[in-house]
Image 1 (cartoon, rainbow, N blue to C red):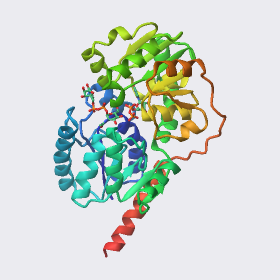
Image 2 (image 1 turned 135 degrees about the vertical axis):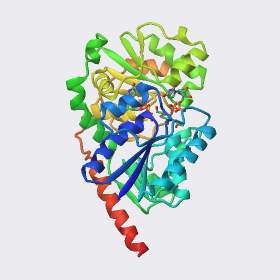
Image 3 (image 1 turned 90 degrees about the vertical axis):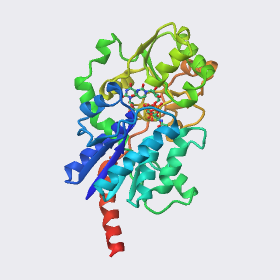
Image 4 (image 1 turned 30 degrees about the vertical axis):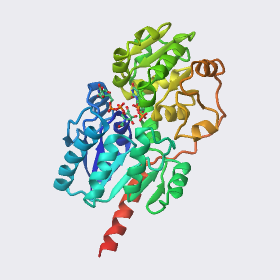
Length: 361
Ligand code: UD1
Ligand code: UDP
């Protein structure tokens, strides 16, 4: 069996790491295609090195651009590679423009498509990610769902065939790399931080970064906090901060740092008193690490994190953010029921492809 894995953005490298290792360990030939959507060293190469992901076989070097331009250029490049490589299956991850382009390219030339993290919905079509997910799911032959909610969402849209509840590859990654993070990361010492004596914040969603009022509210809120606020800044947010001249809104004990590698990020998350974020992946990691999370969005795809009180949605309203910080408390003690997703996904892939071969005969 030959698979082409298509990735392009930071969270996709993290999702790829455990599954790629699982495929290769079992003798499955994998070709990695990096669209080049993320390209800074600390948004891309660092993850391949740290997470020991083999170098991409192809890097299309697409870079940044408007949605149409970026996705269109990816589509052209991906199609060329797929025509040349002729894989048995293409795997796309998550909900970025790289996911959308990968899904479209393979569906159009009839290569079976597997979507990792299928079925997630925010029910907000203003989010670019929501469009990408809906399209990718409706084009996919094999849909790997991380949660029961995701399976239900697909059912509601009439998708039941090829749907598998397998768990979350980001859980696999976190479990695997948190041991390594504990051994190797020196980020707390480097930043002179004491455990549970600082907040961690990440912000990069279009809905926040493209709206100056929302950014101002978030920045003003964190500037009033009584402990240090560590802010590994996404390049998108860094650019907006400069363009909009909002540097003055970041005061107090806020410390902006460059984006960090995954091992440092795990240590920063684990030891934070609370995490403020609009990231999908960070909300889940906070939940699995049992760190209270304040989500700077109006809705979340990861509704399970809300259910046990570990996550709270506050949007970008300053008062709501400050109120949430004032009332920080742990959620319910719940025991882990998660299983590793990667071995299940490998088994499904093999089974599904065998079934398809038989059907073709
Ligand atoms: C993308 C995904 C988003 C995901 C996020 C993860 C889409 C539509 N969005 O958002 O779902 O949550 O990645 O981080 O696919 N930039 C750099 N260097 C880089 C990468 C980006 O400077 O290496 C800057 C550029 O100015 C670029 C901007 O960030 O225009 C946005 O990058 P882009 O990849 O378009 O979207 P993200 O906001 O990163
Ligand atoms: N992450 C990281 N370094 C950082 C910020 C985030 O390694 O400086 C990791 C984080 O732990 C999570 C993933 O990147 O695993 C989330 O990616 P991001 O927030 O960019 O995207 P999203 O999950 O929202 O799509």
